[in-house]
Image 1 (tube, one colour):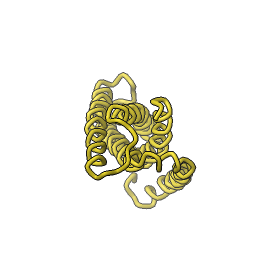
Image 2 (cartoon, helix red, strand yellow):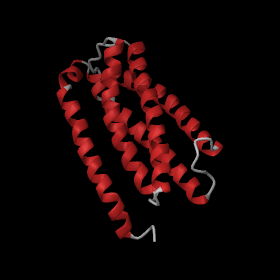
Image 3 (cartoon, helix red, strand yellow):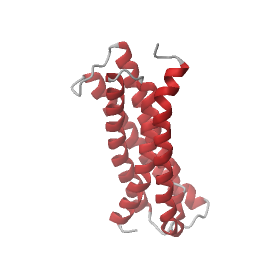
Length: 185
C-alpha cells in the first residue's frame, strides 16, 4: 500500500535527511556572502521571495505531474503534451511573478527607506535573471523527480516537494550572487 505511514516514512526520511544537509550548505553560502548582502540590503529581503516562488512553482508543477501520472493523463515521456503544457505554464507563471515581485520589492524598499545602492532597472534585471534561470532548472528537476520516483514505484507527491524546495533554496542563493556579479552591482 503506497499510502501507509510506514512506507511514507521509509521513503521520505532518507530524502528529507539529505535535503537538510543541502540546506545547511546553502546557509553556509549565504553566511559567507553576508557582507555583500549588507551593502545592498534590498537583496537580503529578496532572497526569501526568490526561493519561495521557485519552490512553490516547482512543487505545484510536481503535484500536477504526480496527479497526471497517477491518473494516467501524463505518460513517462518528455514528448507528452500534457507534461509540456504544465511546464510551459509554470515557466510563464514564474516569469510574470518574478517581474511583479521585483518591481514591488524595489518600491516597497524605497518607500521603507531601505538602502538600495542599485537602480530599479538593474534590480529588476537581477531578480528576473535569477528567477528565470531558477524556474527553468526547478521545472526540469520537478519533471525528473516526478518521472524517476513514479518509475521506481515511489509516490512523486512525497518526493518532488522536498527536492525542488531544497534545490530552489540552494540554487536561488547561488544564482543571485552570480547574477549580481554579472550585472556588476
